[in-house]
Image (cartoon, rainbow, N blue to C red; front, side):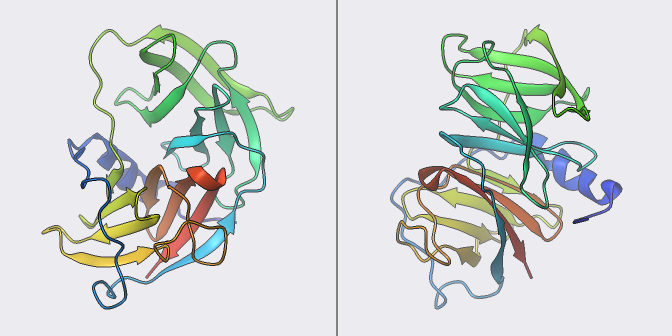
Length: 224
């Protein structure tokens, strides 16, 4: 499944580095069709792999891989972004509790490891070999403070995508914070249109990936 041309992914991925890290207060109310009905979001795919505690996630710069921090397993999972098939993993024995991932300006993968390392770990990630092993090399610790996105992602059209764990929704707002749309009916569950304490979101074009932390899965959504 081809989602987007590589060059069309770059603007969305680079938006990660905007200092847009504030999150709305926990316990905010769910959005409804009466309060937000401009953007329609539908479910495209759901991961089938066994995950422990999916956390932060990001697309590789060329858009070929979706990388997700599995906080409970202490590894970085590598998925096909369209099929959501688990392709590989790395970081076992090196990471203890990874929570956030993003690619830096030099192309390095930066991992916030909140466990024993309590630091940002740098990796060179160059894909997955035919045998299923990840082409990933640990480069050491970051020597300066790194700002990671916090529960929000600003897309190339300046829409603000937010995971609201308390409301069990992914919400989308306009540049002035006006509510536009949502995914999740506001109740925790695994049924159609339901999430359970989602933890992270990333967007490229019309495609949206969500760490559905409470359900131990990753979702691929599409908006229009």
